Image (tube, rainbow, N blue to C red; front, side, top):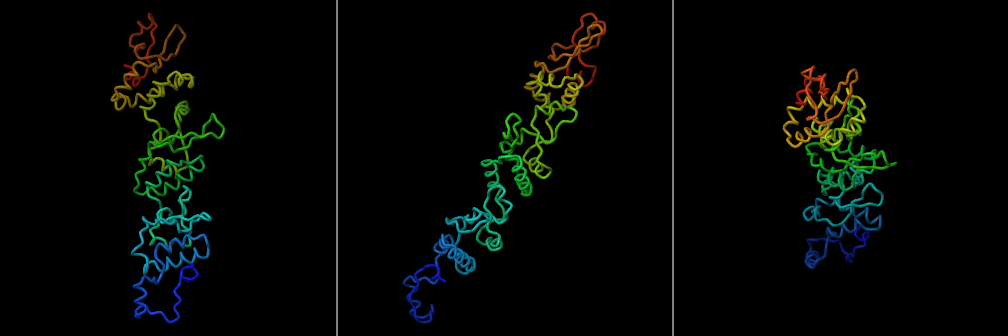
Length: 332
């Protein structure tokens, strides 16, 4: 076999006994009884297929007896393990046993070796650090590929803390303004469930749906089901007139304000910066009565009056708050 490996063989005519005086003498001089670890790994990475396969088999078959003590997968510099991709080879710590990880462009060891390579340091799956690095440095290029990757990662959740991905832009979003265009967002800036009653808001937030299994992974990364009342309030401060124009219905806009008002005392009032902006920005719907005509306007809080004096209203015709107790509390 060593001759097939192309290794130099001593021309020994007699039966070899390593314990015989001549055997002891030759070994003391440096004669090797089998290839060194470095040599056998280099042979296992040979460009000659026959030598490569025989050397790998020899290494695995004799690993415990001859090589385990000197072998360290972390120090192995030779890519000698054949992988699923034709013609590809990897180091022990750069390939994995389960072929599912190839969906993320990791190398998977050839499957006829999957029960033999754990002793060589080959792991079942990549670590969370490796998965994170691959996902963030090489994010999926389209929605379909992303779905497959997210489903794979969903199966890897275990005790992993995926919230470390919350700020990374790895989620592909189809760009409606460019054919085949893709933008990317992060888990903090998108949501899973669209609005039903406030449909107009769907155009102002980013919603995603990669299927039930993939969505579970994205939830564990920090993707929420819907925008919070605080986020809706922030949107109104920035784009109230665009939303008002997009809605076209006073009642629908009131529904949005009611949603904010429901959490007003518990969340928004505890955010001083947002609260001050809401007081100054034209985000509130108001009513103006002019005879039989009713006009709806968008304005700021200091331009609106609570309708508690009908006589005053008839004389001065001010902008008044909607007749809704929750909204009146917030308007005040």
